[in-house]
Length: 308
Image (cartoon, rainbow, N blue to C red; front, side, top):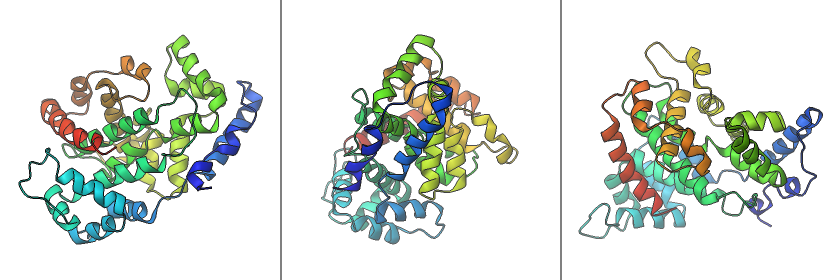
């Protein structure tokens, strides 16, 4: 049986965790065992991730990576030949597609498709929507990448990957503890408290911790792990950023909130808790950039959604 289809199967069949403090450690162990069964990155995805910090990355190098995956290649060509790009002739080579899309856009598109494809056979709680999860992840990634292009940020090259993977812990909760997952949602609805606080109360740990732990197992850069860990407590990373430079965690928190406000949430309950994009961007010192960032977001999101 493929590893992805075994994802957390054993954990899902175990006795569910209660809210007793004495069982918090057992719940964390159960979730961490689930992390051990996460499907590994494919060779193509590994190389795409490695290219984020590769200053010598080139069109030819990225094209050669994408060409090794026939499904990914087909989706890239479908994108570049879509009405969105208004091409008169048909583009039939990945190398030509890279020159049209640009290095960063091509890499982001390939990362989104590769990561979303990992979850195709994951078993989750009945009230979990994989479609909404993928859409929220991609929306947050696009917005984070747009923000770092407008301001000074520590580790800006990791913004898209951080956005794409920041809520992986929520997926782990839905897969590792499907019998208890709805209790988190019920507690949030009843109390009106943030999701991470409800997770902490019931299980003794939260989804940002699980997300960061998963990224550590995959060997992603510390800066991405730290930003994901603190995407609900971004100012905890202030000390890691130079003066006048935004912590990546703050960019990620802003992108996450904006994605929810734009109705690209994992759960509709997330949306009323989010501020409109304008005030969020103003807080980052990007007053007046809302129109440009949202226009770019809508164009890129349309392209991503056509393939996801």
